[in-house]
Length: 599
Ligand SMILES: *[C@@H]1O[C@H](CO)[C@@H](O)[C@H](O)[C@H]1NC(C)=O
Ligand SMILES: *[C@@H]1O[C@H](CO)[C@@H](O)[C@H](O)[C@H]1NC(C)=O
Ligand SMILES: *[C@@H]1O[C@H](CO)[C@@H](O)[C@H](O)[C@H]1NC(C)=O
Ligand SMILES: *[C@@H]1O[C@H](CO)[C@@H](O)[C@H](O)[C@H]1NC(C)=O
Ligand SMILES: *[C@@H]1O[C@H](CO)[C@@H](O)[C@H](O)[C@H]1NC(C)=O
Ligand SMILES: *[C@@H]1O[C@H](CO)[C@@H](O)[C@H](O)[C@H]1NC(C)=O
Ligand SMILES: *[C@@H]1O[C@H](CO)[C@@H](O)[C@H](O)[C@H]1NC(C)=O
Ligand SMILES: CC(=O)N[C@H]1CO[C@H](CO)[C@@H](O)[C@@H]1O
Ligand SMILES: [Ca+2]
Ligand SMILES: [Ca+2]
Image (tube, rainbow, N blue to C red; front, side):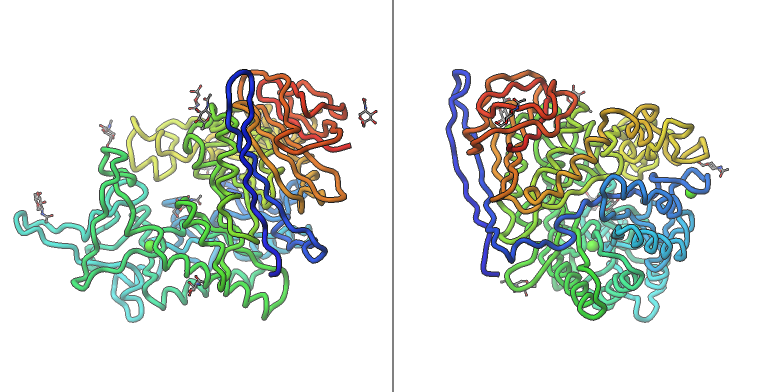
């Protein structure tokens, strides 16, 4: 590589309405010589996460399935999606809805068969859509044959999982777990197994024993899993729960060290009670991801076809996350998920009051720390988080889609966000998520992930067109009568219509290759410019607060000269698409977001 991205940070001081505000304008400049004008498919892809259980039910059992997905591929194509990643569809007792895999080489019967999967790949290929699978490396189900063999200490499987005797407490005579480690879903991470007479480690639910990555046979086995699905035509993998893969090596006496208290909570069962310095973010985990990338690249070299991608799920600190991109000598994942819009701001639950400075901090955190030559990505939500409309406020649903599509790099949509689906409060009786079920009726709402997992809303017909069965695995959000694909497609303006326009806009050369400049103009207004020599420039202005603003100058911070007109607007803006604007003096209604183009 003879060129590197040049990062230029400019600090401006702007005097606004009698108070002095500091606004950071950041310019991300790309060299755009001729050899830099082609991008690989994934760099300009519109990714879409399908949560199969809630996408489309084809056989009336109230649960989404592969034939359901096949029947809706035309919809994905219609809205401009080019690649989709599926949450796990592998054989599983469903203790953690597919994140507990009993057979990594087979499909969960309620979702379909390997034949259905082959049909899905063929039908997707016909439409130019790529299918990416969720790879869950950290653990298997306790019903996996590997675990059963390990329990019996069968030859070759003795050390497939992380086993330990624990310790006999001399004063009480009671056996105690090897360390104070906690599982993600409340309580000890160690479970006693009567048959083997040892504890096993499970960083997630009891039914999700951790595989032992210090055993080369496990490493090789998991590579076989990847190759098996590559042979069936997948375009890559999204890797689940990466930070948990490796734990610290035990000391010479075989002891695992206790983790220190975090001070975040007094609840000793809550995983955030401890600082996870020995059970997460170990350096060996990064190297493992590099090895998986090598496997994908080797596969392409041998078998041809398009680049296979790796997407990495990790909520770790940014400097650790950035390591997954690779280092100077070794390639890593193309897409370490950028969760800054989830973990940044005021945290993962409620960003409804976040101001323009907060938004720009989030944007800047990724772009300023991303290594040179890499591609950014923007993930607003997923099946573990509250819906975007519930976290950022319903008035900002379009704004968030506009930001996601306008910012440089890969865009990832969680199913339903294109419709503006919102959280549904789920009663304790209807609660299914183990993270909530392991707690109790008075506190489960803090832990539940069910509200963002309700069935997809296809139409205003019975059961939202999701299923013919009126009893679905999670209840359907009653707002489906207006928030659904059919109604939003027919409407003059809707979240879905705007989403489709954004997908189209994203295909312009400016948005694919252009440089980016962004700033908080004042507490209310985020301004972003995308420009490319010889092409139309675009400017996004978003009033992210519930107060109106007038006479806002975005021209100065963006170095934007010339005339602009409105090309897209959310309904919160009282704006006529096609009309001219004066960048040096804009008026914006509460929550108004505009995309402008140079004329
Ligand atoms: C409808 O779904 C429920 C579970 O939600 C299931 O028990 C029932 O068998 C389903 N009905 C049919 C006809 O499959
Ligand atoms: C042994 O048990 C006692 C009583 O529950 C407890 O206070 C003590 O910390 C335990 N010792 C160890 C080494 O865990
Ligand atoms: C890059 O990562 C590889 C694999 O983990 C490691 O062997 C190598 O030393 C690293 N190189 C640099 C320059 O950090
Ligand atoms: C988020 O916070 C705002 C302002 O405090 C409040 O009005 C809103 O109800 C909260 N939303 C949720 C989902 O907690
Ligand atoms: C805007 O957000 C920033 C960062 O989140 C915060 O420090 C500042 O106090 C906020 N400004 C106002 C007026 O609330
Ligand atoms: C629920 O769990 C919390 C935290 O462990 C506890 O304080 C509370 O008493 C429990 N409530 C019920 C109804 O069990
Ligand atoms: C908008 O601006 C362009 C370029 O300055 C100009 O040609 C056009 O007439 C203007 N349109 C309106 C409606 O003012
Ligand atoms: C976003 C995501 O996929 N989270 C998953 C992380 O891993 C655990 C355990 O496999 C799952 O429960 C989460 O759903
Ligand atoms: Ca079904
Ligand atoms: Ca592990």
